[in-house]
Image (cartoon, rainbow, N blue to C red; front, side):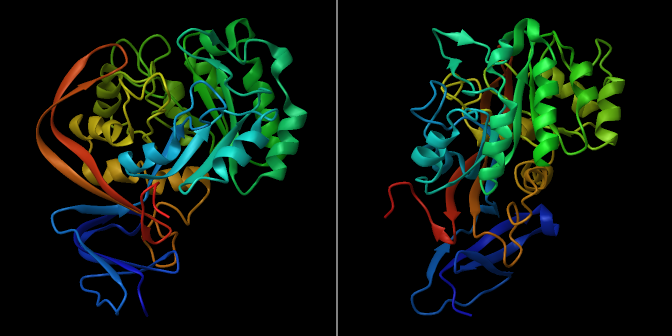
Length: 381
C-alpha cells in the first residue's frame, strides 16, 4: 500500500486498541492505514520524524462554542483546534432550530476541521452570553421550540449528534427543570442523546441526573458548590452513582464557572473518573480559566489520572458518547485524524473557576494535528 503520510517513531497511545508503544502511524486516502513498529514510505510519501513525541487519535473536545460571528460567545474553531490539538470540535447548543441553518452554512460546512453539534432546544440557542448581556435562554418558556428542533435535527443528522439544554438559576431561572423535560421529549422523538448543562439550583443536581437516560450526558459534572456531585463529607452522592450505573455519561465542561479542583479531588479520591474531559471553551474563558483542551487535560493529569485515561476521555470515550466509533481511534480504516502531543515537565500554574491555584509538575502541549490523513494548519490550501 502507498501511504500519503507516515508519523514516525513516536510513542503511540490509543486506548481503543489498548496500545501504548513506539510505532509508526500511516495514513492513506484520508483514513488510518496502518500502525506498526516500522513502515516504509514510497516515493512521494510525507514522513514526519516524531521521536520523543506522543501520537494519539485526534482529540475530541465534547464541549465547545464555535459559532463564531453568530453568537457573542463563539470562538474560531480552526485556530482553536490547531493550537489545542483538537480535530473534532463539538459545539454544544450555540445554535438552536431558529439559527442552525446559518451556523451550518457559514461555519460548519466551511471549516477544514470537523465540527459536530448538539442542537439547542431553545429557538436561538445561547444568544445572550457576553460580558455585558447575560440572558438565560431557557428562562422564558416561549423560546422553547421543540417542534422545529425535531425538524432541524432530522434534516441535519450528518452533523447533529444530540440535543442540548441548559438548566439552573442562570440558564433557566424560575423555569427550573421544565426546559429539560421539553428537551428530553425532543431527544426521544429523534432518537438522539441529550446533553444537559447544570448551574446553580434550582433545579438540584440530583433532580437533573435522575431525569437523564442511558447515553445522555451531564456536562459541568465536576462543578463547585452549590450543585456539586459530592457531599460535604467528601463522598459521591448516591444519585450520581446510580446514574452512572444506568449509563449516564459525566462530562467536565470546564468553562468559566463549572470546574473546581476541590470537587475533582473528591471525585477522583472516590474512584469516580469523568467519562469525558472537555474545555467548554468560549469567548469568556479562552483567556482563562479554561484556556483550551490540552490545559484542561493537563489539570487531570496533575490531579492524578494516568495519561492513558486522560487520553481516553478525549478520544475513545468521547467517540462512544457521540455514537461515532469511526472517531477517537487509530484502528485501520478509522478517520485519518491524529494529534501530536508532548508532556513537558516543570512547574506549571493551573487555576480553576473559583480562583484556586494548583502547581503541577507536568503539562500536556499540542505539537501538531493530522486531519483527514494530512498534516494540517487552518491556513493550508
